[in-house]
Length: 568
Image 1 (cartoon, rainbow, N blue to C red):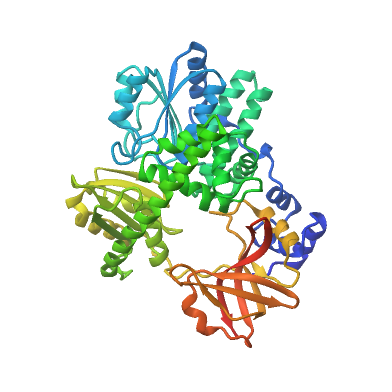
Image 2 (cartoon, rainbow, N blue to C red):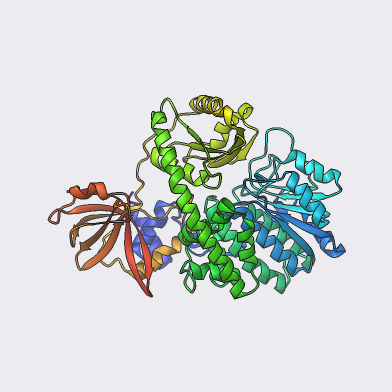
């Protein structure tokens, strides 16, 4: 936990950073001045050339030709945040080029994930001769073959793991996870791969690596959509993803898009620097609610809005859909938790496979995440409709590939796909028990994982002097998320300034005021109301927390999010 002091002091002097930030950098492996500077001050020069992606040159050449020849291009997205963001990015890009462009987002319940018969119908309706996918298509062998037979070329931009069998007959398949890929960073989200395609076309149209000014400005603004997708798709915020998210958050803050600004206004984020947490907890859920409760087309329309009034109207609709999503989610979660009791034994059931009739397919992914949080093991939640078709979403824990587990039940599913941390599937409802048995058996074949995860503490700190100025320095570690977690700090021997208050609609949280010297800070202990009896006004407390800046009614202050505490 405590880093080499010589390395710390070296960074304090070379990078002119506070001691606590230097300790955080060293503990995270950024101990040299060069590594620390790269982490604190990312540059666009750190992005990899898009030409390194599989079949990128072929894809860019085909898209450039389509624009030049006046062909109709259909952008084929998907109904989650990544698919929506990348769809908006490519539609805006093609409109900027003056191309004929249409877009299509599958309906979650009517069409299902990725390509299908609906894709062929939409291409014929629009007269498209070129289809470009975003965040899907790597496994869509039959539908893409049907498009090819209809005379339509398909460029797939995707980031999902390829299937073990045949790949689809695309004109070009751009995916950093293909076995043949030599691209140096494989963890891009789908929108980032779509961004790379736009960038490659910009290079071709500019006659070289240096992109002409109008296209460069577009790419810089488009990074905002990449940031939304990168954060919400929970890809590791390291390497190239960190650069994309860093500049993308800045682009969102400065975005000229009326739709983006309407969303920022609706979530009280307009006019201030954005963090990954803002996107993950405010923007992402509203975009996702569209595809969960209605059609993700509503989210695309919001982000494509051309005027402020239109943007605000669409943003308000997303808000109402998000409210409805919360209500439905609560009902499904209650039923899932009740069902989970019979599968509580982690040795007997290393993956929780739960299903129910009428469980809304739009919330099963969120409920799966809640079950993972509660039981600390992978979970697959399946909602079965009136026709007996089950649509499920799986989520996992670090170190366990849920996609690998899903492969163990391939014989019992109509289709499935995804990646290590998240996957989806479709089954016939009567196969649920067989699927549970198969996935349980496969889980037991995988290497064991420690059920109890130690709380990782970055370093000790003194709360005295912990102020907004210091927090601004610590925030230079942003964007934080998967692979680059928020700092977890330990403050020893702090005191309660007043008795704890139990808060929250369900009375499960605690609000504390803690003191160290002359510094008094608010601390929020979510889900810890049952531990109130451990605290005494007269007893010192060791506090493990993540600091953050809170913005409320024009006032900014430091507050602590408690991870754990221990009274002496």
